[in-house]
Length: 265
Picture 1: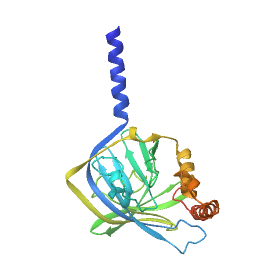
Picture 2 (picture 1 turned 30 degrees about the horizontal axis):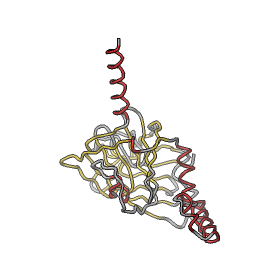
Picture 3 (picture 1 turned 180 degrees about the vertical axis):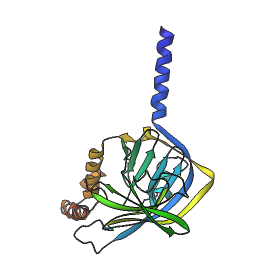
Picture 4 (picture 1 turned 120 degrees about the vertical axis):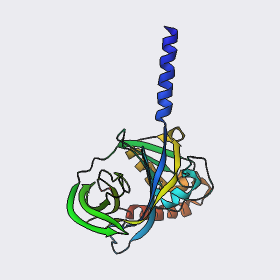
């Protein structure tokens, strides 16, 4: 009886540990240029940033180029701290695991060692594939449309790259999504380049190094940090109160102006 209990506990411990670790060998590296409009009151202003999708048999990982290049999110899986500052609007990683139907959303607070993650269901998109084709950088692509979180999207995918992947959380087409944009062109992912990795790149991450939370809680925490980074970092007490108040007002105004997020719902 005692031996049986020990065996059960060992199996349970192994399962818990393995559930905290994600690993794969990435076969594709896809670079997108994301052009976006964050301020709904100033739609004449757009910004752009390069984003990178890595895809393998079991996982995909999507993040900004700046986050990808930082040692904190090193592809080899070393999640150690680094002094290198990530300059990006997007500090998250989105890891899709189709077999389990899960998305792991990870976030590291800039200049801090605070790491968080939450899990949500992999979105099941209702795609309408249209009989329209064109070419994007020598790839034959086909048109498809869908709706997601309050926006309507047009996508162009290629069956020539037989992976059901795309930027951000987009997935589910019979081929890689090379371009996708909402119909108002507020969020536009353009194909920049693709590399078939040989040899494949090993990737692993240990979620035990992150504090697990819920989506709403992480959104609130991020908003608090962006609106008042000095208080979050414990530096407000060392500042003149008037200066701190003015900094907080400016940062809060900047954060509140970013009201045209990709996900409206």
